[in-house]
Image 1 (cartoon, protein in one colour):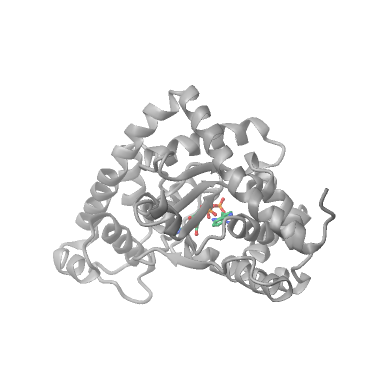
Image 2 (cartoon, protein in one colour):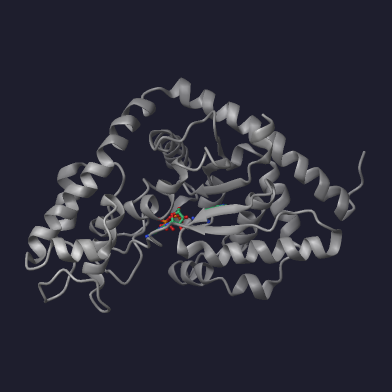
Length: 337
Ligand code: ATP
Ligand code: LTN
């Protein structure tokens, strides 16, 4: 117990906007599972964030289904609900409460500079809500509530983390040391997995084109098909080079699944052409994902166990986050009764 208190805290959430892709997995989730020995870990599902875009507003049944399925998938990745705090964001009221307070310490200008906001609002021009704009302050609240030292995320979330750091520092400068200033932990491979059909875009589970991404629960035959039809280039050498975005992406995927370096991969496939390489990539991805799918099928069938884990873990998260929220409310000057 004593040792547990000394561990530094790691925190990250993922949105229930669809089955996670190979990009989510290699860029973020894969690293989560092996952190609980070294760190005090909180992981979970950012369901409050997922209603910031129209696709998930007004679809309550879908949101509920996705949330339960994602929770089962987190367990299937090997995340222990006992060693970690594994929870659903909306089950813990302090997130929304602190987010409101942080909104009042965030400049309109700095929130306007978030590239994700610019991208997502360009995509939904006629339906841009204040919630989408305030997305990063809710994310900052998530992290700061638990005094997380490290936040494992993909490259695309770095700017949001930078904002969380700025808010924490600003708050500390006004009220004294209150928040831990969090640092990002970007996956070792730096893996930013790109779309299979448009390799200049990141692989994203909300892409309209299903062929552009592989989900963690895809059937092997579908994985093989998608990789075989992945966009490459008109050359034939398996080399990691500028401009060969499609091949570079497949090399990154293969490297992340097999642990081989780029150099080793280039040597292995020297003179073999793209066809053989694509088959090997597909095999490696299938081998990586199938055990996860098998475990997922067991967890999703046991609703009672899932609910019990969610309830117990929400309780753990609530106790911890409430402590921080109380301190903040006192500092800000809300009357204590
Ligand atoms: P959406 O399509 O709904 O915006 P997403 O697929 O981009 O979702 P998120 O739920 O926003 O995924 O992200 C979950 C985690 O996965 C984040 O830490 C994010 O940085 C990481 N991530 C997302 N896409 C990729 C990718 N293509 N490569 C590497 N990491 C990724
Ligand atoms: N914005 C993140 C999900 C997210 C998150 C967080 C990640 C919400 N709150 C706190 C890390 C820490 C995303 O879309 N990937």
